[in-house]
Length: 333
Image 1 (cartoon, rainbow, N blue to C red):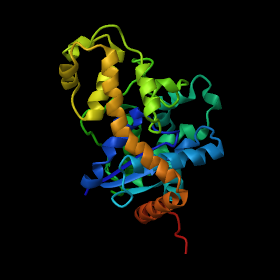
Image 2 (cartoon, rainbow, N blue to C red):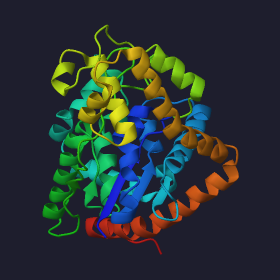
Image 3 (cartoon, rainbow, N blue to C red):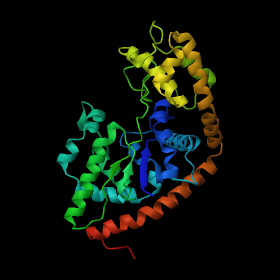
Image 4 (spheres, rainbow, N blue to C red):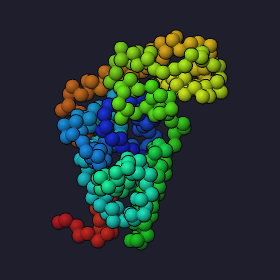
């Protein structure tokens, strides 16, 4: 099978947006690809993290991934910091990547903000570590969103320059893995903004740990407009909140927005929101309960992650060692 790699930061409990936009799409890959998935805790510390919070959130993210359907027996699931090949190869890539390339990375500019001189050097070279994450497994496909495409292009530039400089054909080309149109879930308080864990208002998002009451309360208070639902998608133009709720129901029930509109044409949002609440609870409640069960048994969860790290190390270590040999490092005896 083609080898696929993807990672996710342990930046808090995943939201409905994280689930519908990324995590849910990883689950079927376990049957079609050699799948390697990683909680990227090394990337997390490019901005300061409270150590206890980082440890807690790392376990939460791992538990969420398993609860959402990633099976440690069918895929390789591990913590980035447990496989040292990532940082070993990242240093080599720090020496291969050019400053001009990194200066063009728009995500650093966005995250660093106006005071870029105060940003960590880790945040600046973040794309080099991302390239190492992928290439230390010789993964050739990566599911990415629009915000990561530039980093993937940089990873290919690094691989190509390494191969050219050392006159080898060692690192493969990486292709973005496109799986149809990913659900883009927007804030429940502002339909023009993406649903985000960083939003100061918890009312703006559905968390995978939210129970029935929390989901119902947030959806009932979600911003909408006074117009009834139209029968066609064209009727949602300039109605971002309405379009968002219709899209969520379509995504969570596995249908198209057009089908949702045909079924609910003419209804007001009071009745529509109750249908949406029922669908969200039916889909997310098993995930919430399984996540809670896993977190109540951290010993077993940690053991699963160690086994995943062992499998990942078995793939990554020889690839990284060969890259070091190509560079000219002497092997450790």
